[in-house]
Image (tube, rainbow, N blue to C red; front, side):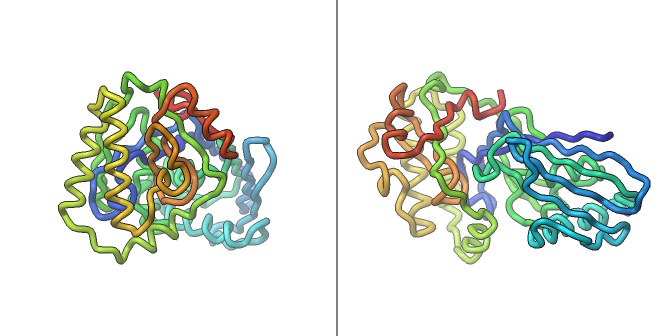
Length: 299
């Protein structure tokens, strides 16, 4: 049996503009997804995906070597999976010539937007011994920061560059780390849809330079007050660019700290900079999933 593991991801800075070449700060998560492959004699690929409760949430069977879908519990997911597997084979023609059984096991809630797709792509790339960014380009698309996080062991500065992005390991562990939390907004955001919507927006070079500057200050910051100012400035710039009101202004105007959207705005997680009372604040508003930074991020 072959086994492959990939980390989940969170994009702390540079959302949207990373698609236009901005440098982004991204964090690999402490939880991820494992993929195992067991060879079998039959010329079929049997696939089962398990959630955090060890229940099968997706299953399919493919005929080999064509990867025709014989049956599946969800035809749309099966088609997307087939696209990823075929992209891997285009890079490695000997990949999946023989049958077997695949199991994937998620360690995080699949609705959280932590990278159920990117961890899968990264693990399939390990399995097929190919470039994961090539698979991404031929399947889901996007900047690739999430795939980069999947195999990272530290926070990264990520700059897109086709199938050869620039990835730099950095340290991000500010002295006020105990006061940082990730809050789930109780709804999933389709990041691929957000990518499509943003593709036609023109981004001035000055905006990219300003976000890059904020990102660099972000990782060097030792004052929580200054950090909160950086979060607010980043929100203002991106909000104006995409035509959306920042989440704090829209939903949490009485919050005394600072709140920043992460990834595609309007869903998944936000980053809240506050204090020990922060979890209670969000719980009172009906947002019960509040995860300390130290628990969420790999370190």
